[in-house]
Structure formats: structure tokens, C-alpha cells
Length: 120
Image: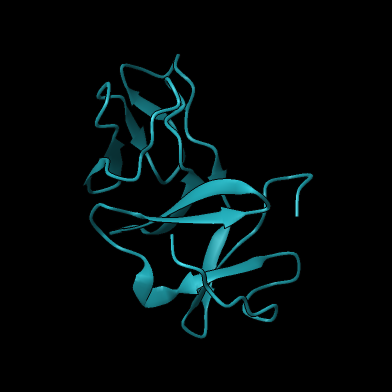
């Protein structure tokens, strides 16, 4: 993981500057950053930027090298699939835990993420 210079003014109040916009990939390996001590993945899809916990909710395996098809991310380890636009588990089904999405955006060529509630 590369160290990045953080700019406190990159996003709305309460957010953390985490990367240059051009650093967020559309294919694996995805960009992993730390936000308030939590590992977060940044992914660019046809629907836009997504930020979520870096571990698969199923068994905690890393998602950094998962497969992305449109907005569906597949964990390489046990093939669970998640919609990165809303976090739902689309396979094996909605009864499984989904991704925890974080608010993220881009301002002036920089990516910002709002830390998980109660952190920061």
C-alpha cells in the first residue's frame, strides 16, 4: 500500500482525502486505503466510484483481487458476489451479509471517503 499525502480540504467536512482520482482502477487489483484504521477498497465501475470494506463479508477473505463484472464484484475465494452500488449479496443470496458501503466522492481530481460512523 502506497502512502498518500492527505489534503484536508479535498472533500466535504468530515471526509478523508485518500487518493488521486486516476489511481482508482476499474480492474483488479483494486486500490486499498486505510480510513480511520479500517481497510477500504476503492473501485471504479460503470455506475461510478464505490468504497467498501476490503474483506469479504462471507469469511473475511480479501476482495482486492476480486473479479468485477459491471457493478458485481465476485470474491475469488468462495465465489460470493456483491453489488457494489448498494452492497447486497447477489449470490448465494440476499440472506447473506452484504458489503458495508462508505460514502465516497471526487473533488478536484482527488477521492474522499467519509469514515465509518463513530470513527474518524
